[in-house]
Amino acid sequence: MRIFDPEEYIAKRLHMIRTFSESRVGPTVLATIEVNMDNALRFRDEFNKNSDIKVSINDMIIKATGNALTKHRLYTWAYNGRYRLFPTDKIDIRAPVDVGDDLGMLVIRDVDKKSLIEIAEESKKGIKQIKGSIDIRLNNIARFNKRFWFLRPLVGMGRSILDVATMFSKDLEEWIYQKHRELLGTFLISNLGKLGVSDVASPIVTPSIVQMNVSTIEKKRILVNGEIKETHVVKLIGKLDHRITDVAQTARFLKDVKKNLEEPEEGLRKIE
Image 1 (cartoon, rainbow, N blue to C red):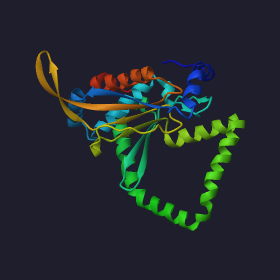
Image 2 (cartoon, helix red, strand yellow):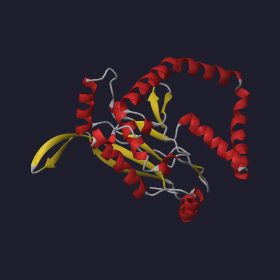
Image 3 (cartoon, one colour):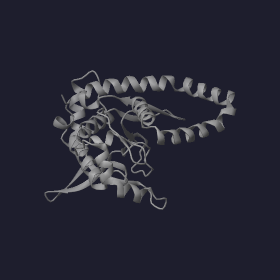
Image 4 (tube, helix red, strand yellow):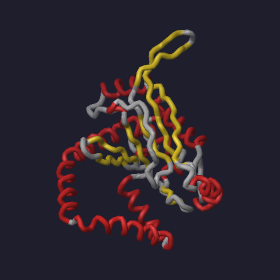
C-alpha cells in the first residue's frame, strides 16, 4: 500500500467517511487471521540457545508487525475522525503491559530498523522499569486527583474547547497529533495471550486507523497430506476504522504479519 498524498487519499475515501460517520453506523470492523506458529516456536528455541538475551513470542510479534508496516505505512498515520490524515515515517509500536490494577505502556521505537535481539533487550528493560514504577505513579495520580478534585469538570470542558480550536487551526491539530505519536508510538498491539484470551472485540482507539490484538497460542489438529497433525496457532485480530480503510486492505497487512511469523528467518530480519 503506497500512499504519497494524504489529501488525495481523503478525497478518494470521502464517501466512506460520510457513510461511516453517521450515528447509525459503527466505524470499527474486526478482521481475524490464523497463524501457524510451529516455525516461530522452533526459531525462538534455537535462537535462545545461542543468546544471553532471551527472545519472547511477543518480541517476535512486535518485530513481524514492524516489518509488515513498512509495506502499509497508512496504518502508522493518525486520523482525526473527520477529513485529515497526519503522516509519519516512524514505526514505533506501543504494547500495553499488564501490571495488575493499571496498564503500563511499552513503546519500542523504529522497530523495522532494529534487530530481534535489540527489540528483546529493549522490551525487557522497558517492562522492568514499568513494573518498578507503577505503584509510585498510581499513588501520585491518586493524590493529585484527591487534592485537585475541583478541576475534574474543567478537564472535559478543556477537551471540548481544544476540539473546537483544532477545527480552525491545522497547525495546532498537527502539533497535538505529533506529540501524541511521540509519546505513544504509531501502532498499537495488545497481546492477550498470557491471559489465556482466545478472542476479543472492542472499539478502535483513536487516532489509530488499524490496531491489532493477539490471542493465546492454542493447539489445533489439521489435515496435512492425508494425515492429522497437531500444530500451534495464534489469532491476529485486526481492528480497523472503516471510514479510512477497508477489510481487504487490513487483511493484506495481517497476511504480511502472518508470513513474517511463519517464515521467521526472513520475516524477522533487521531492515536496513
